Image (cartoon, rainbow over all chains, first blue to last red; front, side):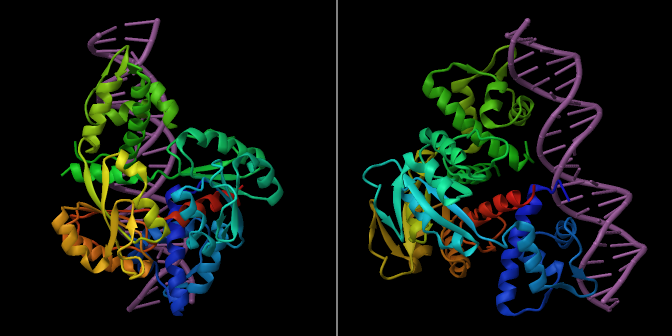
Amino acid sequence: MRKIPDSTVRRLAVYLQFLEEFEAAGTPTVSSHALAERGGTTAAQVRKDLSFFGSFGKRGLGYAVPELGRRLRAILGLDRRYRVAVVGAGRVGSALAQYAGFAARGFDIVAVFDSDPAKIGRRLDTREVRDARTIEPVVAAEGIEIGIVVTPAAAAQEVADGLVAGGVRAILNFAPAQLVVPPDVELRNVNLALELETLSYALAHR
Amino acid sequence: MRKIPDSTVRRLAVYLQFLEEFEAAGTPTVSSHALAERGGTTAAQVRKDLSFFGSFGKRGLGYAVPELGRRLRAILGLDRRYRVAVVGAGRVGSALAQYAGFAARGFDIVAVFDSDPAKIGRRLDTREVRDARTIEPVVAAEGIEIGIVVTPAAAAQEVADGLVAGGVRAILNFAPAQLVVPPDVELRNVNLALELETLSYALAHR
DNA sequence: GGATGTGAATGTCTTCACAGCT
DNA sequence: AGCTGTGAAGACATTCACATCC
């Protein structure tokens, strides 16, 4: 069960999204074809993706919606909740800290940090913005497992070091910087400008 | 020159980022090895990526920083500016509309839309939030080429249709919905929750 | 009949390794 | 000597096609 393509994991998360719509609508069963159509891929791809983890379908019938949902949540590790910290209470950071989509998927933002004295102490929903110098102890004390970095590039590595020292197991980095973290800490980068740049490339080439 | 891997395009944008740091620092020349190190890839990969578009380096020496910068900007279509609209003035939409990183890379947010009467008319920096019902005419009149969709999933397709009718050539979609657009409109999806979900998968599997 | 599950075939991307400039 | 540029090899991912089962 090791060595699953990264692209497969991403697609599984997408399938789960659709599946939850089917769940809400009360659809009892769904075919690989139906999932593929909505997810922008092919039926064979859907079946191959799922087959890495077992065989959850019934031949001739398709997949039972509630069961496949449960399975996918278990596979993705979404059958539990995570405690998450956001570092950087600028516009994007604040928006992410309050983004309902995170809590809806099991990611609870339990702490927000910034280094700007003007921001420290302010409230953001129910949480208070805390001093970035306290990242390490707070992360450790609160049992925070995931850190989201939304600082300027120059501050990102220092912040990441604090998160790691506090014991996070994963970091989602929005800063346009290449972070260095220990190999046992999972790191994913999201670069907003980059997405527009690939669009620019596509527009320029035809 | 057709058929460039998507991953290559993304990496080129990353190289450009680093190159601009070298440019700022006045470093005259850079090797594929140096670029690889910072970009989290290998020297061979850097050279292969660049070789799709020509040979910009000097053997035994490396790449001239200013020239490679110019070339990359030209390849990525970043040697010009783009007019961009943001639809959805919620927390994330507002943050994106004011995100300095976009303007810095040549993407000017020239219009912001929302359908909520409470938000329409409000100012966001220098721009006023406009009625989403006017997307099509405003996009057409303002010569907007790129639309960023940051609405709830339920509204996203309608908004996309308006953008397309107005004449955008590309859409960056943050809504957790699979949009349908004509084949000549470039579409890229960013799903914030998805990124955390792939981290969750990684945490669950070891 | 209809849809899954999966080896095998195909296609795509990355890495290797070395010839060729400077 | 140093570092690029690139075919060829290898690794990886997707698609095909069909046997299998409900």
